[in-house]
Length: 131
Image (cartoon, rainbow, N blue to C red; front, top):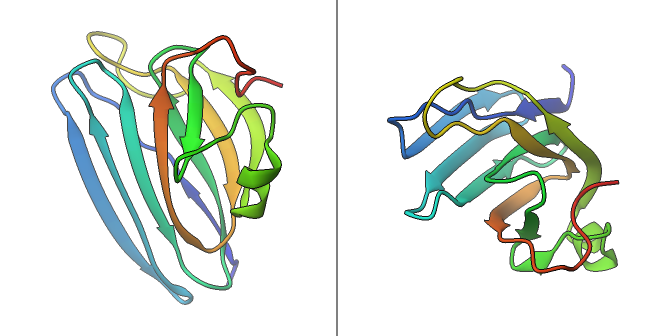
């Protein structure tokens, strides 16, 4: 079996949260996301041992920053890499609804086995996830 997975939520204007779990030969892959009142997203992902995953984190704005377990991902931080996260880039126009509160910008990351919490935070003028 292939030890790689992909996790990408599709947004719809009326849905403010979702969770899913799927079993693999390596263990369960789980994901949960919530949209807060300010349209910012919190995204939790669990990846089993022996597996890596490409994670697509929806962003409220293409200039937003992302934290991983409270650690800024900005500029491919050493702390984020040590936590098992590698920034791959930002994708525009990927998936989701074309109307209402839909997210068309994703921060794309490769993650090692583990449990992660990603938060979309307003851009503070520091380096953004863009490369």
